[in-house]
Image (cartoon, rainbow, N blue to C red; front, side):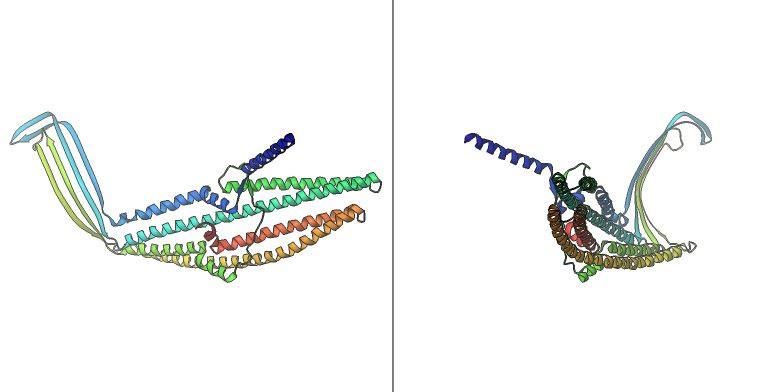
Length: 442
């Protein structure tokens, strides 16, 4: 009694150990985990974050336009020379006379008024920072959408693999039935060979689908910035949200869509460009100030030593009287750019409305098709069960059974593809309305 008990316990231990090793070998990757990893590691997102950080730095230190600039300069020179000169009617000469000059200065320059251009420039830096932040959000939204498409595509391929695997079992059972019929003398060698040919075709389809799964996982790992051979497992269900409200989504597209927000920011940026150019028509007033020190020594000159120090201050004004109407031309072009930006907003809005209508119709059709294909799948499954039983009894031919098998396979494939299409349409709607950002990014 003890030995069998020990063997049973040892077998349970091996079973638990093997199940744990499988669990750790294949990490379960949920859609939330995939999005989190992608947003954290994706190289494109990291580059976009760096660009946004640069724009933030430019705005943080953009107050330099309002502040004075201070510079310090210093120099010293040495010279050895021979000279001849007349002093008091008497000719004199020196040989190897040394002379030196030392000077230092602190200078300040401050633009007091430049036609409000410095204010427009600072606002422009702030707008460029906001645009960079918005572009980062857009890139994150696109990445989340691509990760979602890749993730649910893997689920779809996994389900199709299960379908093909079940189909292989049915094809194998068909061969066993044909072999039994041949042994009993009620079957034909032709039907048996045809069954084996169909089994090989089913195996080839399974291998091709398995290769598609490997490619899909490699692509998802690329989006997540992971090694291509990183292994993982995924959930096995595509859950479609059937309650997306049209009016609510449309309102959010107008108010929350990232691309439309970027177009509005670009329009505001062109308005700041007009302000900057217009400011060139105003006078520019600058303050300059400084403190200087200068010392010179000359062994062979008339003046042997000289040292000066002093403080200076000045104010200057400059105004453009005539520049060949260049400012007027630039203002006109900037205003044209502003009008083009307004037209771009309307064009972008129309494109989004068109995309929304098309995707929402696709979403509704996909939901309707899911219900229809689920019904077709149930019918095809029941039909295959009946066909298999009749095939065992010999009341239908091998070709008729194969046709029922093919119909069932097609029904399963249509159902999983329709669920995937519905999920893609749902994701696109959430992306257009900005809801995708709310779900995963904020």
